[in-house]
Amino acid sequence: MVEQDIRTWLITNTSLESAQVHFTRALQGTSPPYAVISRVSGTWYDTHDGPTGTADGVWQVSIFGETLGQVKAISADVYGLHGAGVNNTGRIQQVSETDLYEQDAGMYQIAHRFLVQYYV
Image (cartoon, rainbow, N blue to C red):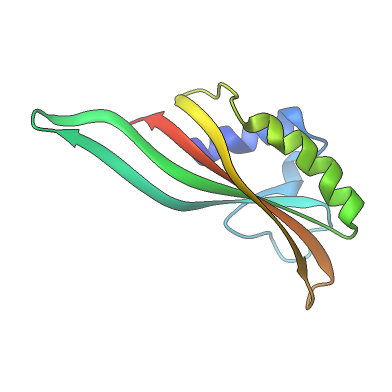
């Protein structure tokens, strides 16, 4: 599962601990900083002979924190996922990065989007 592979990479290669890396949404009461991994889109490939065994998708890794400096420091490490070899992936490429401020929560967010080509 690509999401689990990304989660393992984040725990191993950033300052985030296991309890700080979540799928789809953070658990209520999670203290910042933390990350949320979400699948944004996906495509499966077929030929005239049937499935190719490969697919690609876009995953977003959002880093949340109380200060912009905190979020930027973790995001600098997250950029290392670009080009990383992660289990069943053929290629990981960062395609965008967006800086946001969540007014209601009083939190900064940097959202990284990665195109992931993988084997199914």
